[in-house]
Image (cartoon, rainbow, N blue to C red):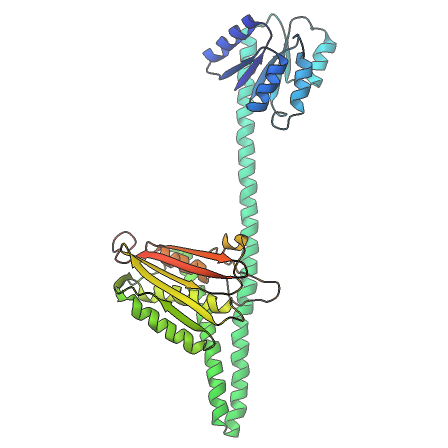
Length: 375
């Protein structure tokens, strides 16, 4: 938009008509003071500013405008009938003017200059947008590279840990076998098996994320009883974590259409995280209900909880909740995979949490959706 500032009404009207005839959006002000008020409220691409005005003259208006952060880049063209000497023209440029035109004004020349300025302005705007977009893209490459390096480092560590443990237990087994100590052999075998299961879980997560990235994560959907699945999961989780009591609240009393193994994977992930991030506690609440043909499953713990900043990123790929006092194992992809699984079932996933008081992860999904999201 162009702002024309002139204390002579005839000048305002004639200039306004010319520019509007050539499809420019125009605003007017009859004094320097009025112009400053309008500059504070509106954004202008160009200001055509009369030099000789009562009150604030054009130079004073230009200097005031240059002090406004919002308008300091706005271009100014001075118009003057009386002040045509070089010193005034020089003052116009030093006050921030793009050009200084003397009256009587040749409208064709003024119009040509304004059109040329607008063309340059549009080119600069597009260049600035391209530069901003390029900088954002570069920062996104840098961030992606940093996350990739961090993930490789984490994955290497997490994979080495169970492997090192298995190696240690195998060495202990060799000694126990040679001594004929069957009880100790059994104990070491169980511990080695546990570490191998951790390793298998980590590798499965890595394979899943690779399939998600390539669009090859497959689903085998069919009807299955969700209540039985939950009871089985609770039994297995309780056996492997006897120090935790998992309370189940509610019943579905129906079959769910979906990939039973993948839904179980999500629930196991919720429960595993609830146990992992709840040191010093012993209870977890699993809630299930069906309403309006929609399944709701939630796992609530009473552990460390999360800050609002952490909540914003908890389903991001490679994101891990870290505490300064302790380090939790994991690749930071379990919840990302879970979110993808629920999305592919036409559902939604979410979390509620209060720092220091615990978290509740939940998902909802249609119980019998067999069309759009069937894969």
